[in-house]
Image (tube, rainbow over the protein chains, first blue to last red):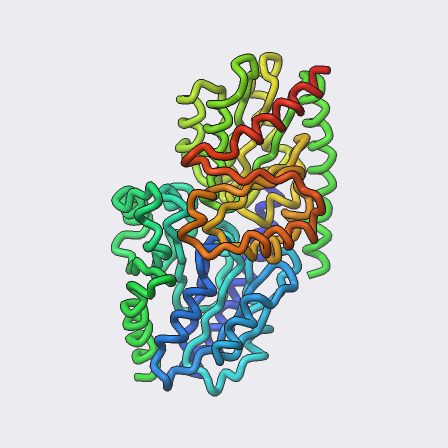
Length: 221
Length: 221
């Protein structure tokens, strides 16, 4: 077991180095980069689509879609919404890493973009261990996943900059103790910026857009 | 990248060997072993609790609970329901493996058991690659995860013996195309045994119990 841990450490080291390069590249283009993580089906693509609808017209977004299989379901939706998207097929790997993101950035028109959102593979564990070179780690939790997730998936909650709580429209039908959930988050990541939203009704998304606009303004200042 | 793949291959080889040992051990005790996998929050623990409620009184169950953090939320619930449970903390690892299960089996009263359910780590990717030595791979999908999951997480759907579709009580509130979902499953795993259930209302669980009873009967025959 000790040997195995060492191998993982080495991969992380080289990944961290490449992540720094990715971030410099985004910085050179004054692009704000977001690493969007979630469980399978928490609503990452829907949330990106709602974001696209509400972004100011002058903000140019590029999306990198990570999947473990050669499917284009998500990237097709983004392209239909009028934004450039690059699909990464990890070939079964359970997370994106900085190498994959570097290759995807090669295929985006960076000189024309203000914002890059990377939709990570649907997984609450492995993505937390691999930096991509983005400026913000965003997790989309969703009401049907249950209120105990911060207690079980501590690593991902500890390293977040923003938490989205999606599918609030389902609250009347699900036993979800918001206080218990929030106490778990607060213990790991005090004062974490949190936006409860519903991609179905659109409720709460404007607050996230305001936060994003502030960040985009800081990049250009 | 090539080197990394080779390392993973070696781990899988030794894991497969240990999984065979685990299965022999279960066979020696005429125990039926279930590897229960799912996304975070699909309802694995709730489903095990509903199973416990409905099992014939003479069936003795032991549960192995896998988590990535040192939490006992799930194993406490099983013990409260009157069944022996062993907690595995993977220390951040994204799946259970045959070594962890071997160590957990050491702590269960195997001579007194008929059924062992292993609740894997909440993850649709990595658990699919590691055999544990069980007799059936069971996946709990849930309605709020969305109908496109079989198209995205192909490996796990391909290697299933039973599929549970949980949270059917939420169908009226969610856009879930059952036909589209089922077509995706059928393409990967034709004729897969499938039980739609609701742990909230109890609907459909009896059919799963009947299947389990048949399997338990075959072990003792």
